[in-house]
Length: 108
Ligand SMILES: [Ca+2]
Image 1 (cartoon, protein in one colour):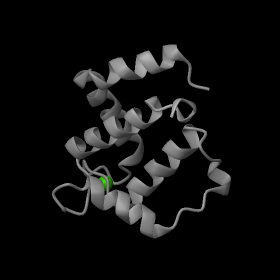
Image 2: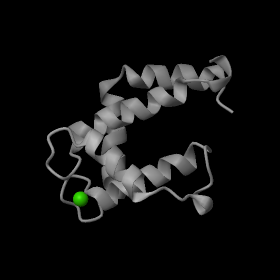
Image 3: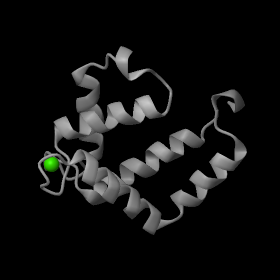
């Protein structure tokens, strides 16, 4: 589904710190349910689920992801081990997710 135009758009997003900040701000607004400025494990889980359903990799209704996997993802991005993902850490997460979207399995 992702055409060349979309890939170019994602690429330019990756290089644009302001765009990343904007995405992070939007995500925080939607997923930081307790509004404490960072995403805890549960909030992160909702975010990951959302991304997976958006990416059309799998249907959210059928989504059975073990807690262990969420925990691993969470730990990978909670760089300072604070138990929550702050906005800087979320920025890194977003860049990685966008990078994954650029990868075309058919080109591999
Ligand atoms: Ca929070």
